[in-house]
Length: 312
Ligand code: NCD
Image 1 (cartoon, rainbow, N blue to C red):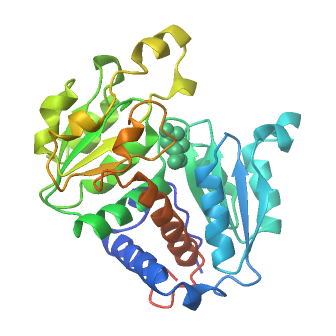
Image 2: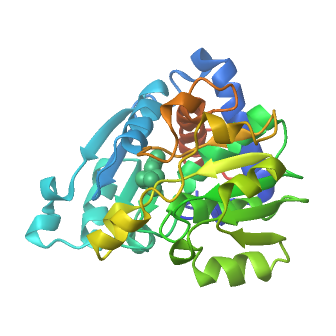
């Protein structure tokens, strides 16, 4: 079987993605049917950058499938401190595990690893670049709670420059008809040029770039809030100036449509006030649960363990 990696949402065709989301829904409905699918399989989690949610979500996903997990959660616990390259590390890990999830502060590190790997490599977030498994989580959440992935006006708000979840989600959504974006950010934190040009403009996707959240709210089907990515700023003062640019609170939610979803990849800092948490439109904690199902479906798909998958 050819090794399949998952480095960017576009590594799966629209049909494969659809199949994966359907599998994730089935896992949600019949978890027991999947409890031994990965018996005797090992997932390695190679996390060179801090993470709670994503790493534990991968661990929970593999354990729910009956598999086991090895790995490290901090570069300081790995041989990277001795100067080992990612390429060498993945050659070693290929001898220990069946599949690996890698998070790295450098853009492209999981792609370099994939080039030398004998096992599927999943990009669990590379610098400010991509975070494709968060995107699977987001797609599953949208499909489940909105009932569709097409004909949506999507607001993305906050740090659109460094927010890798934003880049991956935009990449994934452009294949669905009738999707448009309202990109809400301070001028300094607008989406990178390659997203604006190569992804949005080149595919003829309608979008506007605005700075005012209140004005955008009434027209949105969903609002994707993000935190300002402190760790990617060169300068702390600049971060402090930007960090509270947008705070969604109960008052602002009055301007939003009754069925608008509020999503957030988490962790939240100040950008969503806790008084929004009880609003039925706030689905960021449900999103976390969908993330486990999405990762279970991905692990199965890449290992060729989904009987109906065309990948195997
Ligand atoms: C995101 C990430 O790591 O990019 N978090 C996550 O994986 N759920 C978002 C963030 O850190 O702001």
